[in-house]
Image 1 (cartoon, helix red, strand yellow):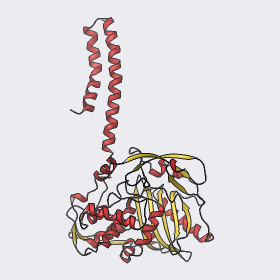
Image 2 (spheres, one colour; image 1 turned 90 degrees about the vertical axis):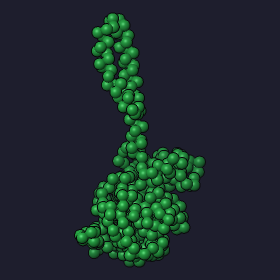
Image 3 (tube, one colour; image 1 turned 45 degrees about the vertical axis):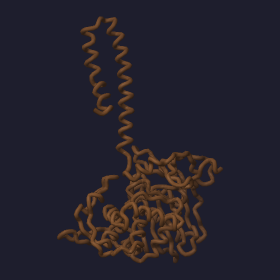
Image 4 (tube, helix red, strand yellow; image 1 turned 180 degrees about the vertical axis):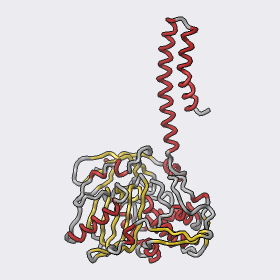
Length: 387
C-alpha cells in the first residue's frame, strides 16, 4: 500500500483509538497517552502533507522527453534586469545545454506564465502592450523599431510548429504521401482535444497545412513521428536548424509546442520568421483563412487561429500563433505596414484576445512614429557573476 494511503489510514483511526483509550486506561495515564497521540496527529498531518506534495510534483511533471531533460539539468540563480533600473528580480533557470543557454522554470501548480513569475509584466512601454515581450524588426534592414524584453527566454507554445514545418519541408519527403494518425499522436501533456482521431489518414501536405494554419497538435506530432529517423531525429533536426540560424537561446524537446521546455527569445523567433518567410509553401499554409480535408466519408473544415489573416486591412506574409499557460498568448508575423516589410514577435500576452489587440497597437504606433523611434524597455538575463 502506498505510504500516503497508510498515513491517511492511521490519521483517520486516531479519534477511534482515543475514544477507546478512555474506557480501558486510568484517567492519569489516559491524559499522558492523549498527549502522545496529539504528537502523533501532528506528525501524521505533516507526513501526509509531505506525501501529497511529493505526489503533486510527480503528477505535474511534463512529458517523458521533458522529464528526461530535467533529470540531467542543473539549476542556477540568475537575475532579470529590467530597463535601466537597478532593481533585480531573481529567476530560477535550468541549464540543460551549454551554460549560456538558460531555460526558465515555473511552479507547475500555478497557472501564471513564466513571464509573470519573472516579473516581466512590470516592464512599461510607450503603447501599453499586454505582452511582456515584443519585438518589431525591419525585415530588409534588420533595424529594430520596437523592443521590449527581447532577450527573455520563455516558452513559445505552438510557435514551435514553424520550426517543425521548416525541418519537414527541408527533409523533402513527398507531400502527397499518406500518413496515419495513431495513439502516439494523442496529447498526454496537456490533454488537448483534436478532431484528428486515431486512424485518420491524410497526406503529409494536408497535415502540414493543418499544423500551421489551425495549429493542429496531432498533425504536428505525426509529422515529427514520420520524419526520417523518427521523432527523436526530428527534434534533433529542429535544434540543429536553430543553431545553424544563430538562434542560440532556443531549444526544442518536441514538435507541437505543448511542452513548456520548448523555449526561445523574441530575437531568435524574429530570425526564424525571416527564414520561414523565404519558403513559399510556409507562407501559403500559414496565411490560409480556412481549409477542408476529407476524413473518412466527411469533409471537415478547419480555420486559422489568427483572425487578422482574414482582415483585409492587414497584409500578412506569414504568421503563427501559440498558447499554453506557461507561455501566455503568443503571435509572430511577417507583415507589410507603413511601406515596410516588418517582422513582429509578441510573447506572453495576458488575455485571450490581447495578442491581437497588441498587434493593432503596434501597427498604429509604427504608422504614427518616426522610423527611428524605439521602445526604451529591454531585458537581459544574465548570471550574477557576469556583472
